[in-house]
Image 1 (cartoon, protein in one colour):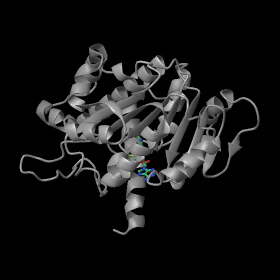
Image 2 (image 1 turned 45 degrees about the vertical axis):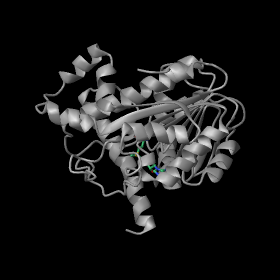
Image 3 (image 1 turned 90 degrees about the horizontal axis):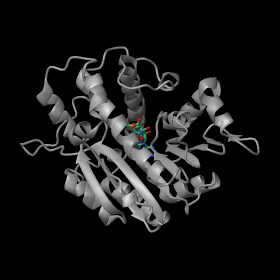
Length: 318
Ligand code: SAM
């Protein structure tokens, strides 16, 4: 596949992630009143282990995000890298947990689609208007900028372009900043993801980064596992480098971050509030417990911080 085709396949992963999330929401794994406005309902059922996996992913990531918002008393900003059709902005607004400003970045083509949905669906546009004050908000086909929500089309592999575009939307590098990369870095080469992490660490004096992605991809024969659950053929370029939890931590530490931690998703699953886990385990029968555990061990959450203001970001943990 040429570079354009490869990028196209990566953009397709955005659709996959949201369709899976919408399906899990429709079964009752968690509530998200907004995802229905971004993607169609899945044509076929998703396997229970996939739904549970997404449950742990969504809850694990949002657990850390809320811990950051609590420590910073929402006096901070969030930059969601490769946000796709993520609905976190709307969910945080409903919970009265919006940071000072919430930014999203993705390829211009994805951003154009997201903006189209926002413009044509009042349940999406109303919360943006409600949280907006001052001048009329800026909107064109590839970017939208309001007081609290902003979305920009940019390629994450070019951080100077990214920084310039975010600054045009009033990114304040001196505010405590949370960068979120949920299933994104794995689509770049090791060099490109390292550059992005390094850019973030050197740009924001007080910051935290959360990364969710594949890990432990080598099976017992030393082969890189083919993600049989991921039907699209994407180049999992980052897999080689970050093949273990230790190398995930190392990558963060080597690129300017401190207090780096990495845990696999089975651990995250076990840390989640047990009453809710019990509730979701009753939703669908899961036959192959062992297969589920293996699947979960192939994904991880890693996070790290830089905290010269002593906000306690280093203590954030499950
Ligand atoms: N973070 C979202 C979620 O978890 O639901 C979407 C995840 S999806 C698997 C990966 C996203 O990263 C896609 O929306 C894709 O377009 C975006 N992405 C990957 N590489 C990118 C790049 N170089 N620049 C901008 N966006 C990129």
